[in-house]
Structure formats: C-alpha cells, structure tokens
Length: 204
Image (cartoon, rainbow, N blue to C red):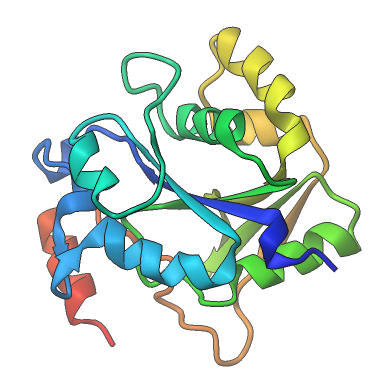
C-alpha cells in the first residue's frame, strides 16, 4: 500500500481568477478563512507534505506555513504549469494535485486514488465525479501521479502542450469514480465566480 507519507499534496492557486473578476481565488474568504487555507486543512491529514503553487501574493500564501512555488513557465500557463512546478519541488515518490477553488473535495481522496493507482499499476490516478446532468466525468485537476513523470511533463509543456488530458493520455491513467453511496455529490463543485463561492459556502 502507498503510505500517505509517500505523497506530497499541492494546492493549485496559480490562476488568473478571471471569471472571479481577476481576484486571487485562493485568498477569497470561505467559512471564515482564505479558501486555499480551508483546502490546505482538508488536504494535510491525507498526505505527508503540503505545498502551494501560486503566482501572486506569495507572502500571503507563505504565511500558511508551507512551501510556496510559482510556475516555472511564464504567463499563467494553466494547471499543467502548476503540476510541473510541484513535480520539480516534490521530494516524495507521489504527487497529489488539488485546486484551491473546490474546498469540499473528499476527505478520502488521497487514499482512494492511491489504492487505484497501485491496484491498476497505473502512473496516474484521476478522480471522476457525477455532475449535475448525471454523467460521471473526469476531474483532471484531482490527480495522483508518480514523481518520475516530471521529465515527460517537461517535454510536453516545453513543446507548447497545455491540456491536462492530452498529457495524461500519454500515460497509464486510471479513472477513480467518487459516486459510491455516501459520497457527497457536491464534493467536486468548484467556485469560478463570487456567486458560486457564496453558494458553495452555504452548502452543508
């Protein structure tokens, strides 16, 4: 079994927040604290180490008490840039990625992804969730991957690749559905706008 101490979790907070009016999403208030801090407190018990990927307000994120790494690719290149920065600074065998704007993600996320990764002898385990239309779809920003994939991601991003699915499609990837009885159907709802953030804050 993959032990949680073999996993580093990274909170992806490096986006422009354009659909939220350009604000830094991770620093928006959620239930009395910055949303990225809420995310960190949910993630920390599931992994051995936590880091944050951010591109602005670095001192604010550093005040959370964990390492903060900006993208190594310039101009807000998207989630894969955050993946790459985290892999470059990861000292454990596995990396778990979670975005800062989906604070109610499952509290057994790491354990279930790790179990599937090992069972299927995969290189990446990616969460999947049932959406409002009833379809189960992949949630690629919630992925557990082997650190050894860093060189592959360097080649892909330096070649101009930016789409997560195009990169993960090059590797043995297992989809892990979070639609068991008892799973929160809203666990993977994310806040792209301030209105969505307020709705999420009021959910159970």
